Structure formats: C-alpha cells, structure tokens
Length: 570
Image (cartoon, rainbow, N blue to C red; front, side):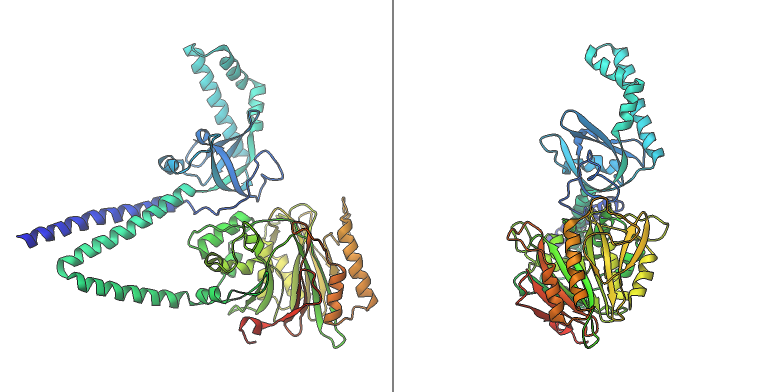
C-alpha cells in the first residue's frame, strides 16, 4: 500500500514537471520565434541628431514607457522626448506588442519614464510614414471631439487639441514622425525565452527522474546520470574542438600584443550570402550564428593610418603599414580556412571593448576567449599566403552606403573575404566590384591592396561608384583624380608627402629595415593615450609570408611574425 502511494506521488510529480516543461517549450517558441536576443551596444542614438540617427546606425534609443502603441499587426510606434520642447515619433519594426504587453514589466523605466530599446535604423517607406501620420491625426481629432462632447476639459487643453487638428498642427505632426524606422531587437522576448529554456530543461529532467524512480533505484539513476554527463562532455569537446583550440591559443606575446590561431569556422560564406549592410545586421548575424543569441559589443572611434608598397633589392615585395589610433591593444591572427588561403592579420580588439585600460575587458579572460571567433572580422591589415596585402584607412568623407542593386557587404567583412579568397590584386578588385559596399562605425574608409606582382591600388567609393587609383602609397585623404577635397586633411597630406619623398629617394627599392624607417617618418607621436598616435607599424613580406612588427613607435625593438609564431606550419 505504501509503495503504491509512493508510486502515485512520483507520477503526480512527473505530470506537474511535464506540464512545466511543456510551458517552457511554448515560451521558447512564442518569445523566440520573432525576437532575437539583443545585441547590446554602448552607442546611444540621438533621435533628434541627423549624424546620430540615420540609416545604417545601430544602438539604443530611449522611448517613453507609456508612449508605445500598436497601429496594426505590422506597425508599432514609440514617442521620444528631449526635454520639454522636443518630441518625435519613431516607427518600430519587429516589435510584437501583443507579446510585449505581456512582458513589458521586465523593462524598468528610468526616472524620466523612458525605457531603452536596442535598434537598427533603416529608411522608412514614405507610404508607411504617411499611414502613421494619418493615424495620429485621426487620433487627435477623435480625442478633440470626445473632449468637446464631454465639456469637462479646461480651455488650455481644448486649445491644444484644436491646434493639433488644424493644418498647422497636422504639419507639425508630419514633422514629428521620423523619416527612419527602427528594427527592434526584443530584449523582453529574449528574457522570456531564457526563462522558458530553464523551465523546459528543469521540467524535463524532473519528469524523467520521477518516472525512472518508479522502476529504478536512486543508485542506478545517479550512476546513469554520471555516464550521460561524461558522454555529453566528450561529445561537446569533439563537436567544438576547433573552437576550444581557438580559445586556448589566445595568448599575450608582449605588453598589449596578443596572438591567436583561429581554427574555428567563422562562417564567411554564410556572412557573404546574408548580404550584411550595417553593424546591426552584423551583430545580429554573429549573435545568431556563432553565439546562440548572446550579445556582442563594438566600439567605434576615428583612426588615421598610412600604407605603402616597395620592392626589396632581391625582388621581394613589401607592404608597410602604420595603424594610428588612441591607445589600444593589437591582436595578431593566423587563419587557415579549409577552402581558402592562410593569412596573418592585425586586429584592433579595442573595437570590441577589449584591452588593459580601465573599463575594458581583459583580452585573456574567459569572456574574451569565448568571443575570439569574431576577431577575424576585426582585421584592419594583413597578408595571405598568395602574396596579397590589404589595409583599411579612414577618410573624412561621407559614410559609404553603395546602392547599385548588387549584394551588400560590410567593409570589414570584405577585408576578411579578400584575405581568405583572393590570390591577386586583380582578383580582389573583381570581388569588391561584385558587391555594394557599406562602411561601419559611422565612418568612411578606403582600401589599399597590393600583391607580389607589384600591383598596388587604392579603392574608394565616391558618389555610389567604386573607383580605383593605382598608387603605391596612401594615407587618409581621397586620391581619386576626379575628386576635390572640400576640406583637405593637412596632416594626411603631410604624411603622404613624407612617404612620397622617402619612396622617390630610393626609387621604390628598399629592404625591410629601410621600409620601417619610412613608417617611423610618417608616424604620429603623442604622450597622451587619448590622442591619435601610431599604435603599430608592420612591414609585410608578400613573398616570404612574414611580418616585422614595431609597437608604440618604439622602432629600436621589433619582432618577426610567421605561421610558426602561432604554432602552425606552412
């Protein structure tokens, strides 16, 4: 009798646990089907500033907690206020307010009644925008007629709504509705999805154990569980062996200089197929495809730089590169994809908030190692084993968002693709010309590409067109002959002249040591870590697949980087 009671109790527990598990699976489905985990970013977008809130921007906006509304199944809106005078209405995409209204208590308003939403900003079709304007006008008229019929509102309120219903008020409403729409990354859905996952796992385990206890002894269940855990760990180790190897390879070579042998698949082809055109899309892709929906951060500041190409007396082709930036740390990356070229590249991990300065994350921490599969996309200069060298340099020019009907690509993804897939400068140009280019971190850039044949070019995007200039040196101003800089960068032009004079003096022939002196001549120096300065100087040997590196303008100390530096053999 007692045994039967215990059995019934176990069955009851199993049923309850199964119900909890089913509820958890349902929450995963409901709150995970259209809401991606938020890609956190420390960039706060100002809806009232054109330079901040524009197509391609990604960051957070502050929306009034009570100003969220649903127009129809596809369109939601949010009110944004700045002080007591300025207000705007933003159109919200990918924000299912039916689910949001259930879970909105997870978002805590600040003292001004605002909640933070992570968004990607896009152009809003005018037809959709006018639909929102009409909705607001109709709503204002409805409120005015209601108040007029009730006769209880004071004169000031009536006067205000009467104004909103006038032609002048409608024009003001039209002006308030933003020309851009926001694609929301639903933090609330992500939180409920996590809760659902925990419920599903715990409920399933409790239900299974309860059912097993009906037939098996606790000792047998514990032993079986341990066997399953060991088997699971071994299976995961085999499945993720390349990622684990990549994590383990991250090390510090010198102060502020790190290296990593990336053996994990960073899904380049899938990235290219996705047609990514903004940081928001990049964050979402990386989060979904590589980190199971976990958030990724990226910082952005201006940077300078110089690059050039020369030939050594014995016929080797060299690429020189200065990376100019406020104090940051560098990561040397070796990659050898199964279907591409091996490469050595330099990445600025400060772009991901990693480093040794206050407020940054230790590059050797577990969290940094976990993010390491992203690092290949942070490459700012490098070479591959086919003898192609590339570097990216910033311009004081309008942001690049090419639109010719070709597939979209983000510039840092293009750099990685060229290193992995292109065997010459010409191949790189064909690759770039097959995409519509988009720049990142609210900046404009051009690319310097050279190869072991000696062909060197600067690739720029001007007036929606890719233009190519053959030159062996470049800094931070546009070199295309048909373009006149409206506001010349004197510092950039000075460094360009220094490189021109150095290369002319040797007739384009210099060994690696001399090439490094050219970089020293063009370097930026500062005692203030917050000011622009040359963080690293590299001389790439395109024929021998090696790099000579100096850091922090200390040119009497250099080190050589080869595949063997990363434990690889080519």
